[in-house]
Image 1 (cartoon, rainbow, N blue to C red):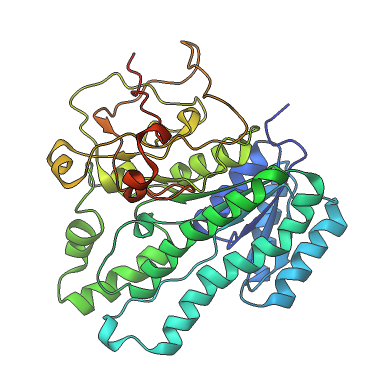
Image 2: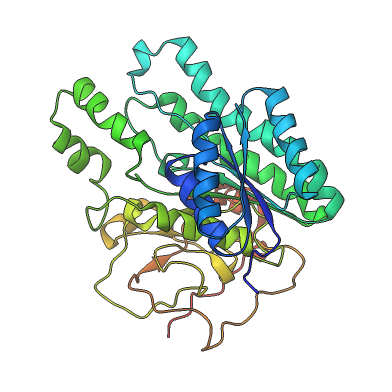
Length: 361
């Protein structure tokens, strides 16, 4: 039996881009994706594509900032399937302008789609997840959930806000077996990013090639865009985790954003279902992955272990995990967890922190 057999997942913004790939991958592993999108025709086309491959899918019209539409889409899903196991809050837009010139109407529009949409879809699904004593909520964050870029004030603000929302849901949902996480990829070559390239070229007065090389990919280790498949890897990992071990509002930075020293090898990927380019997994911790030249920018210290319902994390056997190319993995003070960021470390005292070293094999 596939790991998502019988599971129903609402994926917003799933008619194209990252959302569509998540839906397609979910269906390929036996799940039933609900394609919730502003464009119903495109949503139906994606659903038909999935059905054409032998899967099941359901399309609903959903403007995530319209409370009535959100409630109706969730109600229609419940009427058809009788359950909602997973929510992937993925719908989003991008508007690029200097902060000094940013129209308030555009600010409100972007914030509403990213934050109001996440809130409304979460609230609508939670009543059913709580009743079933099971739920997995994954928010689509970004490298901009931790970092900033010029021309993207509301986007950066909204993506930071998703981490806060996930932290609250992690605490409130734990007693109902509902976990919340944020996945934070780097730049993914989707229509949303393609639209930004000429816009940033115009605003910054540089070529489109320079936007890609010196703005979008300048801090990556391989000069490549993140792929939709790689983002789906992380989302499906969280969606498929059977235990409530990620109910800490953790996030996964994409290595192509932060970089790692790959000159040495030997770090084990925490889970066979998770790409080695992501950190976290069975270790129950959110980690920054840094190049050696970045080390001095961060206070290296242990992270508080972030998992619910278990006294200690499980041991990692030789049979678990897969080879990883990245090494030089450090716990840093800059990673927020649901129990507070590490800037609060001194106030809590050292006894509250997990000092386990990362394992090398």
